[in-house]
Length: 196
Image 1: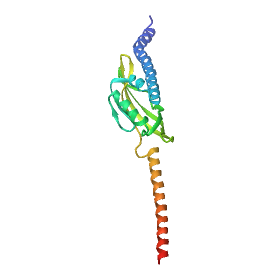
Image 2: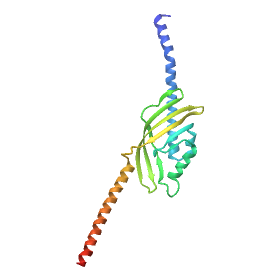
Image 3: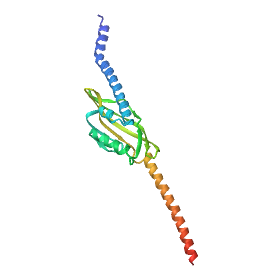
């Protein structure tokens, strides 16, 4: 065999594990994208049984209100608190997460991901609020596939639609108070004016 062919063949053989690893990672990326889609659908449909099946044996989830959960039963309590009953503040939520970049693998069976989401909250009153949020996730490969080991979602506490709505309500209440005070002052001035 000519030396040039021999050199090319050894180069190809040396690169083949890297090519195979890249192909394996593409399969992992597909599975992780599917995991994100399945988790989003479970949240949007409030299907806690399905969501629990996507979680690792040991997990920690920090919801957008910064409430941490480490047990499956806490998910049911969360749904009860926010979506069930007459005092629940929400009718529904639709999460629309997107990854900012492909997941990074920090081991054969561990990946980390991060991204953003435009979440739509339907309040008990029927009003809709779009809340931008950011999220990070740690994903682990278990015997039955990739699972969510850790997830953290958060919103900007200084700039979000709920804060803006609360500030608008504050201004509306302040304006109503000022008008009521002015009317009361005029009424009192009239009453006292008639007595003099």
